[in-house]
Each structure stands twice: as structure tokens, then as C-alpha cells.
Image (tube, rainbow, N blue to C red; front, side):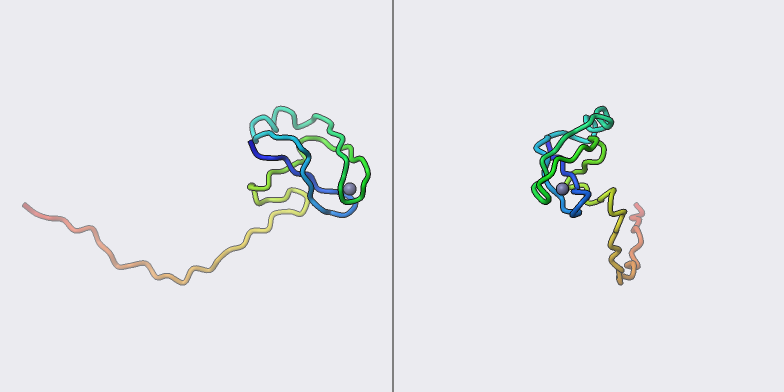
Length: 86
Ligand SMILES: [Zn+2]
């Protein structure tokens, strides 16, 4: 299971919560209050489980979605399906 990450509201830094869960389990405990010792500011943060995110998700709900679109400069190959009669 992936490690759930949280974002420090004071510094904006991400840190691991020590909670291993997956998306399905996270949805079940979305409203679960979690108290975390923040390594960035040293304070305890009272958050809900849904505010956590996965490092592999690539999308940070706090910072908004930032997708990088790579412009593809590839022309489609003029390839036609060949039919063999016979
Ligand atoms: Zn903090």
C-alpha cells in the first residue's frame, strides 16, 4: 500500500503521515480526523484523512491540478489495413 502524504498548512511542505492506505480505504475514512506531528514546522496538525494524497497520484489537491501537456509533433503514419484477397 502507498504511504499517505500530507501538506503542511504553514510551510506547504509535504510529509509522510506514516499511514499506509489505498484509494479505496482512504475514501472510507475520508472524514477521519488525523493528528500529525509535522516535521516542517514542528507543530501538530489536525487534518482529515481525505486531505492526504498519494505520492504516485501526481495531483496535489491543495495546489490544484497542474498537468504538463507535451506537444506531440508526430504526423499520423499513412498506414492502411491491407486486405489480402484470396
Ligand atoms: Zn507544519
